[in-house]
Amino acid sequence: MTGVKQPNWLRFIPSGDAIERAETDHTVVSLLSSRNGTEVIHHELQSGCSWAIAPQKDWNELETVYLLSGKLRYASGDLQGILRPGDTLSCEPASEFIIFTAVEQTSFLYICSNYVFHHYSESTRQFYKLAIEIAEKDGYTAQHCERIRRLSVLIGEKMGLSTTELFSLSYGAFFHDIGKINVPDEILLKPGRLSPEEFDIIKQHTIYGRDILNSSPLPYLAQGSYIAEQHHERYDGSGYPYALKGDQISIGAAIVAVVDSYDAMISNRPYQGAKSKSAAIEEILSLRGKLYHPRVVDTFLEAIREYTDPA
Ligand SMILES: [Fe+2]
Image 1: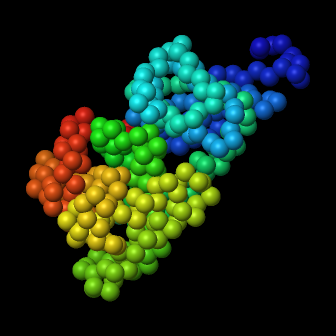
Image 2: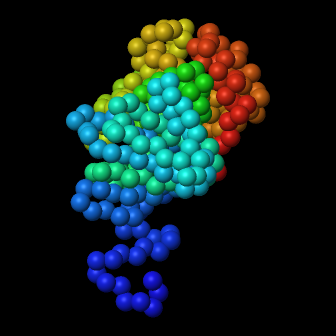
Image 3: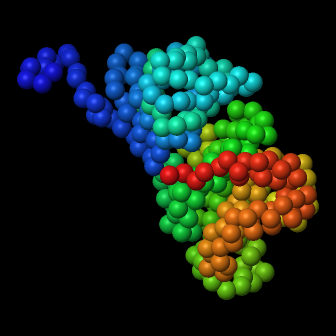
């Protein structure tokens, strides 16, 4: 196209450019073309990243994924498969969640017979606004939240959770501590021991988190709110806020309980130095069936062997 005057009906978009882009740390989504209710969107996902097509009420659109490079795993209900370059997956329309996970760095085109890109960019903006609020409040980084999310989803997959459960686990795990934004700094960041009254206030972050996710403008976040509410419940009933026991605790929250505890053990905290990974795994194992759901601990031990931190 260089050197030739472009007529106004023809749009040339050079490689790496786009009409609009929405970016996260691990994903780039670019709007390549949009007209008459149809959009062509290019996605780049880093290895381990997920993306989903969600079923929607009264939605009757065509949605097609065409793989350009890399390897993309998809799962929907009992159906699972791998897309390779040149493969196409079409929904007419999706009647169940389809979760896509990049097995390696992957790029694909997503073509939809409706305008969805602006919903994407708004979702990304809202999502990161919340993530930044956690980071500013608690010193947690988006990487910490991403680690918890990835390891939780890996355990959930191995335990055979449905794609709908994995979808809510993914968001609930990422935002499990969002309620801390409503806890006063002088309590949340207090270096010494907390008084019983102060600890009661900390415990409220579970309820605050549930309410924040339930009132988010992003409806899919509400599906993870039970994880924010229950992630400090413990298998033997010694947790909070409701002292739920055993299977009264949702499996998603039981997974996040183990992963969050493990991540805390291997991290440097103001009140405690980091343990080695093997010492943390030993400790989790010693609390199997006490604080932690036994089946979750068994699957955690299997998952941790193949888990790698996000780049
Ligand atoms: Fe928490």
